[in-house]
Image (cartoon, rainbow over all chains, first blue to last red; front, side, top):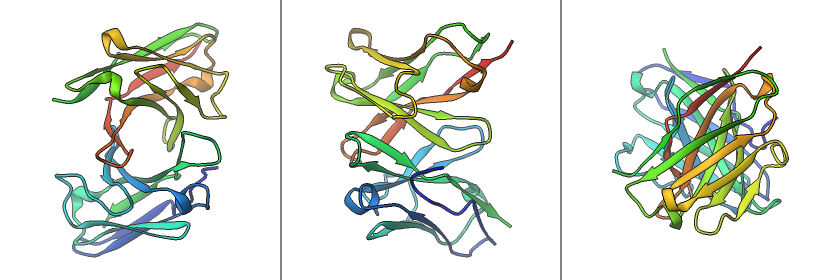
Length: 111
Length: 120
């Protein structure tokens, strides 16, 4: 059981907007930054959002992150076929110094 | 180019030992923390632990403490993950990842993954 809770799957048609939720606690999301990682099939994860809502260079502005209290979300607008992947939220956790917790992952399917 | 390159896939029998590696290049290796992440087949990411390359300060997830050993040799820019006694349940893909600074401590660079298969 993951420390952060995500829906197992979300889906949408091309051009739609989908949102992935991530629920945690005061020791992780509530008191630390949230990160979102995308994992394409057979590949290593890559960060798509850091510090709750910042995008690394190269990540399109269709990806946006937000955080409120002990929850966070990743929105993908203008959904494209190449967005089909697994997405994981993550945060550092204060309950044990220097520890990371991941969500269980959400499979985004483009219909 | 900043990158982490991991050692190749391994096939081992239960009870054997194993040490896999993660070599950094294109940046000052000793200035960064390197984390290890497990992904079992068809499952999600599990954080195992992290080590500071400069002084080997190491933190383990409670789920993995005592089960694996994380180490580093900063003279050759390489971090390691090792097992003393492998079990079939250790079969997984293992990723190393660098904890960045400009990205607010996100894991900004990942290795390509090492597939470990433990089977008799």
